[in-house]
Image 1 (cartoon, rainbow, N blue to C red):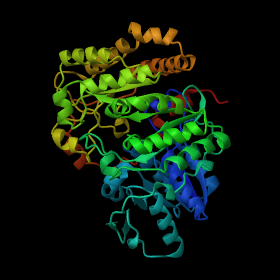
Image 2 (image 1 turned 90 degrees about the horizontal axis):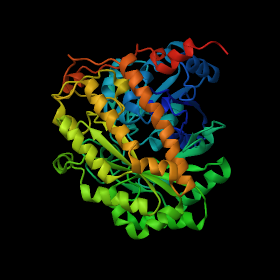
Image 3 (image 1 turned 180 degrees about the vertical axis):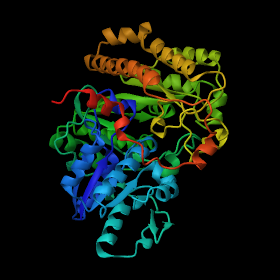
Image 4 (image 1 turned 45 degrees about the vertical axis):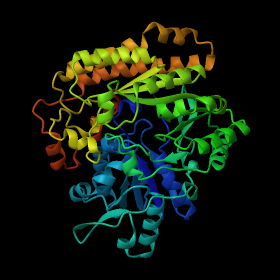
Length: 509
């Protein structure tokens, strides 16, 4: 069959400001098995531009697919855009079959299908095996109810089939890297880049995170085969930077060590960046030289909070001492540390933010990423805050970079002000500036300066959008009411995106 994979444009700051894009790994991951099954598959990555709704529909009409599949890594905030685009596409191509997938559709399949008759199927959970079976069944007129892991409509009723067992051997399905085509996917300062997964899932039950719920269990790729794939990406596609999408690729020390050794043996010369738990960095202090030799230049560490009581409440299973030690170990081996810090787990006061800043300065990470807690309905954290009011009812802003829940002691402006000042204090402190100007490793210094350039642009852009392009409400529903009344807003115009507004104001080329 003729299949078009669409990565919709996103409103998140990260995809709008830096002008660097990473390939949509989820779509490439289902594209590989579909290509191997003999289907004609193309990728339309609307993040480039970003493309307007009319441009997307025009490309769809030009390709004239039988099936369209939508997916996005930020599926909660991307869903309104997907709803709108699928309406426009179905109006022009009523016979096309539309399939969507991702974390948000996996848990909101019923509401989406009930309010979006233009969407035909939802793939729940991992998609590689499911989409292949679904397309095969449609092609041969087989009974769809036997396919595990889908939701669809039949005679007006929404049907949910049995759940699919997670893929046990991740090497059974290849990523369709060739679908990247000639697009210039870059990261880390305009270097050719890709996103990869060594593992899926996370064994830790943090209440605010859906990783352990969506992926069900932690599994990993064959370490040697995975190292060979990274070498192939460099040799065939010119990849210089590899960004790990895993929440915690280092869960199994022995398997991870085998991967590092295999990559070192191949002398790949790649730049690697990823995420990791601080306690795993401390655990691997004796082999951290292998991390560096394999090519790692930065790890994101989910510090999340300094308060031990809060960490226990959200079941983070971390400690202040471990977080600080992990940053020290990374710096000893000349690997950058990025500390994420989440605002909103508790009813914080100004004194709490001041203490948070003091702790972050004491941690001394190279980079910091300030986030807002985002209460997804499928996480345990939702039930702890379901009675709190929602101040941001635009689902497109539910991307961890916007305040969603009302705070007792802060107005939205004052909360934004304290968060932005904490960022300034962290990045302009003397130690950080010294590394920016005088770090002895030129590659690390370049990485510092690249991050500062992006951070500066994002910082000012966030203030601009806060005042002129975003709306908040003082009389919003509580969280439970918000999701009970959830209806996908398919009438939401994509042209309201900042980039599209700018495009309309710009003179024609």
